[in-house]
Image 1 (spheres, rainbow, N blue to C red):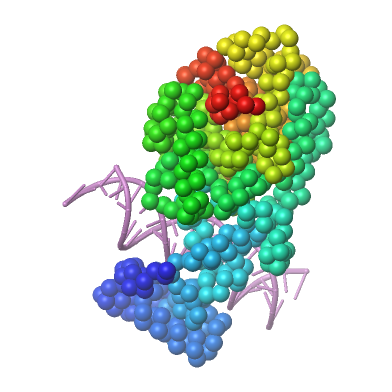
Image 2: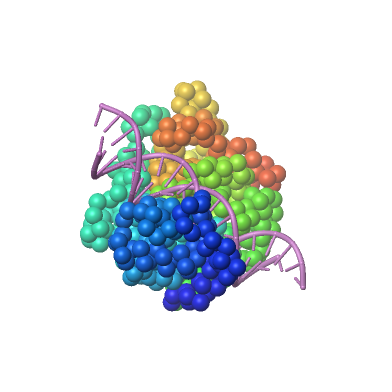
Length: 500
DNA sequence: AAGTTCAGCAACCGCCTGATA
DNA sequence: GTATCAGGCGGTTGCTGAACT
């Protein structure tokens, strides 16, 4: 379980050669400049002796008393991180990892406080672990927090209550989430175009957050937001899966890839999909796995990690896949039951983005059916109706009325961005929905929708999804929107769509 | 086999805070 | 009230070994 001490000691930096050590020790006496860099065993011994003699604290006195050419800070750090007794060394146990995730969800980057909750662990260790973990998850597109942890923290589970107050400011903010009333002032207008919007708006915010939790009964499965196959292929363990859950996940993966590939006449090969062979999908091609940016995103259960704003902001400069975003697939995967049972779509148990999207799609379809002015010819309707329904009229009407707000933007999109602080800094999440719906919303729309984000950061928000090439027609693939048709159908496949 | 990338880690840096003179 | 200092904390850097190409 623990990394062997041999391995640690073999690291030359931590254990300088005897020559190095000799030269370093020549720096003793406190007369020369303070030494920096790795500690030698001799220095360690001196420090330990000093602490045993004088106790902890008064670190600047170490230099005086022992002649160690180290600043007080360095001594304190060395002691607290490496020399003090009862330190646990080695890799974190699963229990510890779990605890760290919980604590971070609750506290944010309060490493020292987290360390206080983890006996034998130092803040530096925890910080390093977290940063490494976050990097890894980011790279694979996985959410930082498992869903159940989010729920636990947001809902205030007994455990998290025992941990004290919720100190993660972002989380607090989101816990008190409210959609500014001003964003609904033109709701009436919007309803003319999207009569289902109110229903969408009624979806409890919590259930948005709970995507993938309520319906993913097993092991709080949170799925990759991109590069799924690589996640699975790779040697990295999938942190939220084990045992049978993994099998189940693979089944979902197969199904998801099939469903993604079908409209594009692709095989369901994970590799093919991952490698970006999707015709015209330059976004996927560009989205190489080394990119830490989440280039697109539906709702991800990423709670505050305070280190991403800049990097994720960059992600807006990247092309957006013309395909339904992989996150959307994630969402679907996360709610496998909804694939099987339409009756559950609107059930409380499986509420969330999927339901919102499905509901929208369903409403669209119902509207299509009810509307006599729309042809029943499936080869014509979906795309055209989408265009006429959501693009031109809305766009024109919004322009005319000076109301740039997207109906959807009021609801899901804003909720998403509100609830996904880490990547929401980049406003990733909403775009997948709009992208799925193949909406062409003006850039101004977004800035108004996301007024909170705009206030939060001064950097102009760029949302590529609203760029001409960010919709279904991006990447030179298509102005031919017949390929896009109904995005939900595209996403789920006609089999499923015909059922609902 | 060589080069590149990645993961993990120790240590440093700068800022902040609280105590004390 | 303020200047100084010690300590704490979070962010970042840089190094190493391992894994990968």
